[in-house]
Length: 71
Image (cartoon, rainbow, N blue to C red; front, side, top):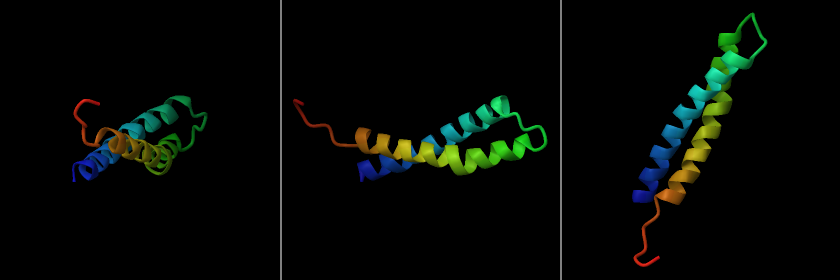
């Protein structure tokens, strides 16, 4: 149960964190002048966010495991 909760929390945090970073990166780096905000929102929601969720899920799997005494 602890590992599952760590995975869910990691995925949620990773999605939000990377979505914000992705949005900011597109706003700063895109040469698109017509609809930069739409491009940034779509990239954040459908590219950067899911990548962050996968990274957070993996981090939750690693850090959510039980600690073994003496190891």
